Length: 524
Image (cartoon, rainbow, N blue to C red; front, side, top):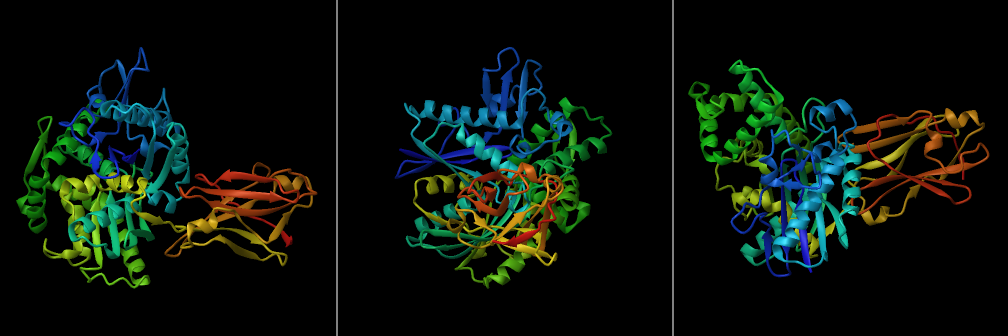
């Protein structure tokens, strides 16, 4: 049986597999092809069953005979019809497109490797920041897609955990001994920034803390895609060229390709520019328009730098809390993964934060090359699928309810505590007290207040006003209920409401937008 690890990315997806001995990245189109598969799907309008993915799909962009979809990962939880329409999602939803893309990718994998059956275990990675920012609906959508993939076992795992596993694997290969210490993963991809602190002992990994940014209202995510789009718009404005959707996405594709292909040239130009802005010069052209070092630096400083600095400051507090010696180059490492982490200004910002002055700084030695910076997450996921490493999951957030007790005082009742081993919360944790209502009318006015606490003094209250009937079993004024929460191994949280007859109604936490308040409790 092959064990698969899939880094389902905003811009690029990578599928790796482990056969028990060797760890490889799948190359769609044969051995000479690239392991970096653009997360793009195209469908013929006359026959939508004719589907292409990856580079073949990108070739159809701008062709009126095709629907071409991209960035669907970051739109899995989007409910704004206008936003979806602007991104081209009119005929098909991001969830449906993502399912087709993953089905085509796995089908191509089996066909090109000559596999007759579907007996492969799959670990699919998702951003850790989704949980901490409350984007539970995106993770739930991804889990629903997993159920449609027709594989014996599919598990969701956070991207930084997979990257940590691959780092520990490479360290063991290099030194012939297990890594012991802390790993800070800086996972910067197309849509999200994840900073995660993990502890590694032998072949066991535990994620301790995390911060970053994924949600952004003005842009698609808060990472590489948002940066690329902003630079292209700045270049168009500087050349006083009118922006049209078809031209914009063609320019965006060209810009992405040039940025990746000329990484070394860009790094040198940006290094010079950061020392002296007077050295600003053209780094390449897109459609006969110059892209200058200043375009990249200014967009980075305005759009990316503030969120990255804030995340690093938050992680600094986490490092101090766990008493991590960040000067210890033997037991503390910073691992940069994800496509956007290869960008010079990202690397410089992270290195400057840790006062890293030379490339010889052992804290930044990842034990894998620049190519594997992008492959690390998928390869780590394949190692997890093969059970080569043991991952200890802890609850990444605290969850509870705000209620009025019998003295009519507001109090927070903690049900799930951040940092607790996840297996302790596989079964729902319920309040000791019972909710009761005094009348039929109260069923339509009483509400619940959920709170989600990610640490760093950030507690979010979510109020479902007048929605009690939607979440409780047997809604009648003579009944009583206890409120609980659970979280599974895929970090999917759910609200459980138990009534006096023992019936339970379960609701995925999802991406709740309203707040919940006004509970009256009695002793149970």
